Image 1 (cartoon, one colour):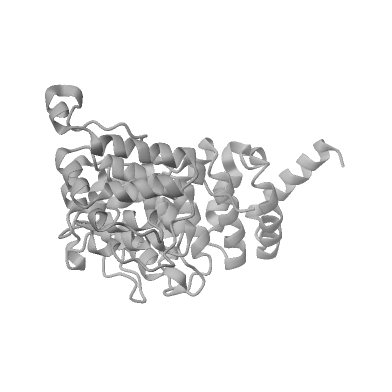
Image 2 (cartoon, helix red, strand yellow):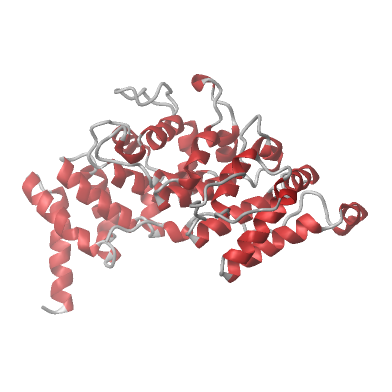
Length: 369
């Protein structure tokens, strides 16, 4: 078959996405999944009519919806298609309605699509969206972000919906935290939930079995840490208490001297001999960048010195054979060992720290192969 004939057949197949017969829609959508990672152009014909059809199919029978969601996940890295999807309030509400349904069989695919939609700045409006409280006891809040947080926390490992683990929402949270409004949400006590701070619900997953969860949560924490005004609460043991959760992944089973451990956080002492360090180098680097951000203020630097961060970074530098990780360790050590007297004379400006921009997880645009 010639390339021209193949394109003609694909165009015909795409046209069946809005056919009146559900069996034909199902066959068409299933067969188009394989082309959604390589043939974006066939879905952009007729002023994006196929994309508009797929948005409708998200609400179709479960097998059809699954194929439609998979196709949209694979296509949503295309800027033109993303611009069609992300601002669509009807689509977003449809996704929210389904992902919060305890019986939704395609909840993970919806989480993936929401994660990709968060690459668009328009998706930050979810922070302020209010909607009906879901049935089934998932959430007591009308706020869409609260409901997604409850999906992620209560739904880990299929505990809420047997069909889903909601892991990919971690990437969604990371991109929402790029925005000032998102950072504010993650560090603000929630009145409906006994004034619990949302970020404290995520920090417990820094050592979760799922690398997707760990990676997304690490990026969320880093992005929140760009809000310098929140640093006192982030590092306070009486508030968000972030430090144990980003330091434990950096630590292995190595032993420390009494001098090293004096002042070290209780959670970091007497670790078991089989304690393993985080294996994902990108996650390690993200935690190190978060620590560097927390050195931005004099108070942050003083706290990190008091809890004996240096020995932990020293051991990580020795044990992890990766140039990027070791460079990140070196940058933290340089700040910790610097004379504060020099800083007061102007050699270092308060509030300045040389860290990469917010982690927008551009390498985490999800495709379903």
